View (cartoon, rainbow, N blue to C red):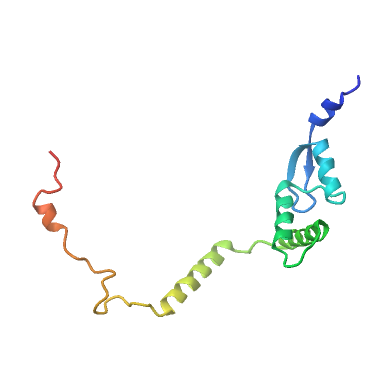
Length: 137
């Protein structure tokens, strides 16, 4: 039994991005169009957008091939990064550094100085509570 051309274009297959490794389900027709555009490489929609962004961000005019090479280089570096050995400890250390920096940095208006009303309460809410103002009938 022969397949119609319309049957071939609607058949969905998995394609793996040659930049990031993401797998997408696409038609053969779409995969072929992407490969034609990117020198025989199939890249996912996210990487395609990143390549377009690379072209837009470049200070000098670059072609799709150069932008694709830059993005593939970025993806390769990213994939080669290894996760931290102890992510919990790294997070705690980062928060400690952030806290130490905020403690060491001078404040624009220190708390407790005359004329600084940032944290001073204007009046107590106790009288409103005692008078029954907040009671519902």
